Length: 447
Image 1: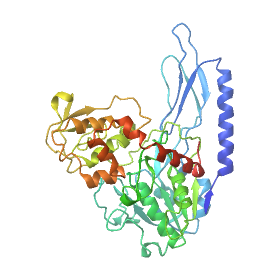
Image 2: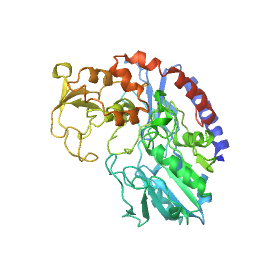
Image 3: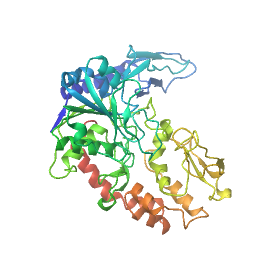
């Protein structure tokens, strides 16, 4: 069973914001106006300004409001209950700017920034909600563990709340850990990529809660890669924590929408259905550019890394370093085994936050710097194909098991070795992507 907690309010807000937007366009005397509405800043740009005419354009802008901020929609579900939270460092309540309008002039673009934020655990404890425990995903509750590093149970230093790892010996909450829990909150910022393991954690949480008749409250957040769908679809025989379900690599859904699909497609197994209540994001569509104010994991430090991650994540199953051990994680790639004459960038990976033992540590890696590339709306396969073609270690280039788990199929590796072009490879995805997009429509909350 699925409840959209503020569905009527959500639809009314969407209508109101659309009406305001078109009214404002009429007032602006025909200016071509580009609006970027996001959580970290709300910016307006008059693209038709010229040097001979000074003008100010004031536009009503509604910021993206994440589910956690809408406490009026879910506090009543928590009062008097024993509550567990599946969360990490991104599980926060933002303090939004007081003003929803501002002017932009020729002098430069103005933006409204967050003043501060509070972790949802701290906020709910302050409201006398009984937080009994926290379940921590990959990277831990405070998001400091390396990718793939086991996370231990413990206590949150700040609050003293017990923390149970879902990325150690157990990836699913045990029956014992849920015996005293009345409701579970899931609030984690995802990035919309199949091998990013937070949606695998979502699967196991929903499954455990369904088995124990415990409802799940999902505080939804935007997907920064929701503006496109692409990649190979995972084949069932390659199911792992890097891919639990037969979806494309870039799936184009928020966590809330994805949870609806998990239920609707029967992916929990044995006829299980998890009772979920979703608090949707306000003022958001899949095309909304959303800049994450908190890195969702140690090696995704900024918007560029998050946008490049679906394309560069393939390198995790090869001999190529994808920027781990640098301050430009998933914005550069390289290897000592790439042909120097083919690449114009070099760097040396060193141990750092999020990468204690980076690939090719201390070695000069030759490759590409992608920090100035335009924002992607598709997976780029050319970087992977060219790296294979220009590698001096073709025999060892692929770690077949790891690469297959990341790709969700053995076919991609075979296609690259056979010399197929990116265009030819992508054509082989077409039928699966078309079928997935049709299936996805049933579960969408946002346009």
